[in-house]
Length: 303
Image 1 (cartoon, rainbow, N blue to C red):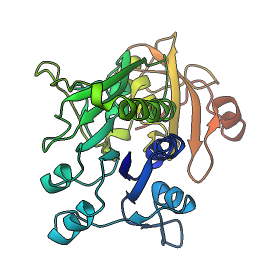
Image 2: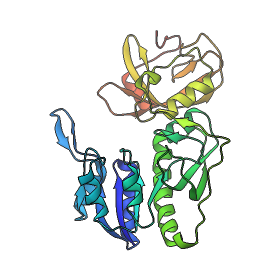
Image 3: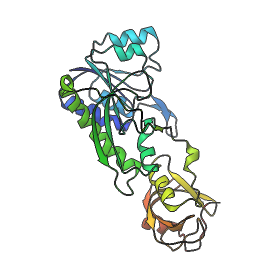
C-alpha cells in the first residue's frame, strides 16, 4: 500500500522499519521538528527523522498541519492510509480524511482504558495487570475512534515503563502490518462508554517520592516513571533517582533504610530499590550503586 508515516520518538522507529520490511511504499514521513538538545543545545533530529533519512525517505516536519498549504501538500501524496504512532500533533479533519482509508493510529493501551498521552506510564502506576496495543481508526476526538485490531499482553511484576515501552513498540509494529494485510476484512468496533480512563501527560512534580504512602504505591511510582522522568528522593540533601523497585518484607519509620542494601520502609510495608542513579551518572544496579554511595540502615531518605 502507499502510506504516509507519522511518528516522532523511539517508540515509532520499529513500526517504520516493519512497514518498510513488509514492502509498503512510504510516500513521506512526518515527524516533529528538530529541537535543541545536549550541552551545546544544537538542534537534533527526532529518532524517526534520523531513521527515515537513513532509509532515504522524504521527511517533513511542519510545526502545524492546520494551514491550507500543509493540508494540500499532505493530500497530494495520494496515500491509501496514514499510519500514526506517537506523532505529537493534532490532526485536523482535512488530514484525517485525505488518505483513501483514513488514518490508523497505533495506541499503547487496551482502549477505552488510558486514552491520551502517557498510557504506558499510567498503566504501571495504576497497577494494571494487562495492557496491549490497539489499531484505531482515527477521528477528531482524543483516542475515541473505533478499534480495528487489538493485542493484549500481561504486565510483568515490577516491569518498568522502559521495558514495557520496548515490548509494546514491537507488538505495535507487528500489529499494524497485520492490520494493513487484513484491512478489507477488518470490522471497526466502536469503543464502549464504560471503562474510559485518561492517561494525562506525566508532570515532573509526580516524580518526588512520598515515603508515607504504602510500599506498593511507591513501587508502582518508581517503576512507572522509569526511565523518565525518574522518581527521586534525597540522601543527605543530594537528589538520587530510583529507577526500579520491588516489594520487600519489613516495617519501620517511613523513608528510613531498614538495612544496608536499599530496603526502605514506607507508610505501610517496605520496598527494595534494585536500580538507582546519582546526578550526572549512569543508572546502576543497586549493589553497584551502593559501592559508590553507602546508605546504611537507619539512614533517612527524603525530607
